[in-house]
Image (tube, rainbow, N blue to C red; front, side):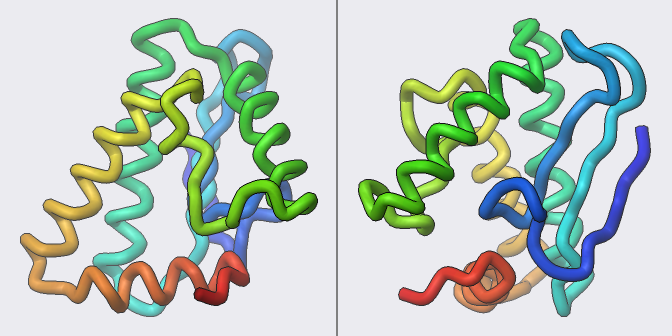
Amino acid sequence: MKIHWLNGRNPKFVTVGYWHWTKPDNKGMLLVEVSKLPDWRFNIAVLGHELIEVFYCWLFKITTERCDRFDESYEKKYESGEVSPEFEPGCDPQCPYHWGHMAGIVWERLFIHGTLASWNKYNDECNKIMGITL
């Protein structure tokens, strides 16, 4: 596994965290990309979310390619205005990694609150990196 800390948001998707395998069908090396946030706790919250999500997908044989196709459909919905970018693809029950994403959100909340960080500040910083204005 290799972790890349990004300056800014992921270039492929509107997100602060992204994982993928270097070879098709979840083979090769796992790469996890996390945008650098101003508080180390925020970085760990995103990293933990991504690891939970990728483990869920690995466990249930949900490939990076399948997840990326779903996420690409959401990028088109964002561009057309059909869906607001604040709604994450993983929150859609039709998303192949939905349950992994939801477990990742539980991790984020537990970690942020458990380390006495501000959930609102965390959300604000993530939205700022993604270019989301509410």
